[in-house]
Image (cartoon, rainbow, N blue to C red; front, side):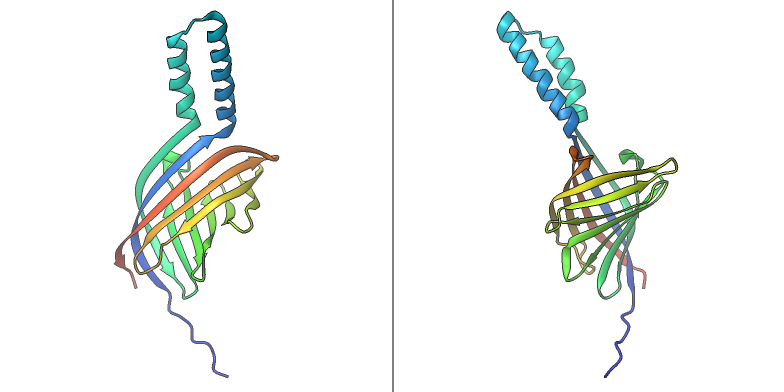
Length: 194
């Protein structure tokens, strides 16, 4: 029996574009309630207060759908079986001081593990087949337990060409979906390190 030959670890620098749309589902319910009450009041009073509507739309719509986009640099590695994308997070997502690793097996690119380290530590698995994943954020104060519910995973990235990874997931706290995230990461090759 021949011993397995060890695959050389390949690493390259990459440019990363992150786009994250966060929808606050709890505030969305509140917003719907406010709009329903406003519509009933308008019908009863046959009156429409445009200034109130503008104020509600301005403050609540921004909170319901928050879109953040930024560019950064990181590394992509290939160990023969797994691809790892590693980068530092942005203060735009309130994640300053965190490093993120996204890992997937080349034979199962639609199952992605996210590991974050730094001011908080967590490990999350995104998998459409096993949609619910319970995880913890270990903070300096106390651990926070929540559940990730994966809606969809699209991953066409590879080591040679880079590509796009899209994660669509909800966050549940005590069985209540509180937030929906649509996370898109685009990787562009820059240069090989080894």
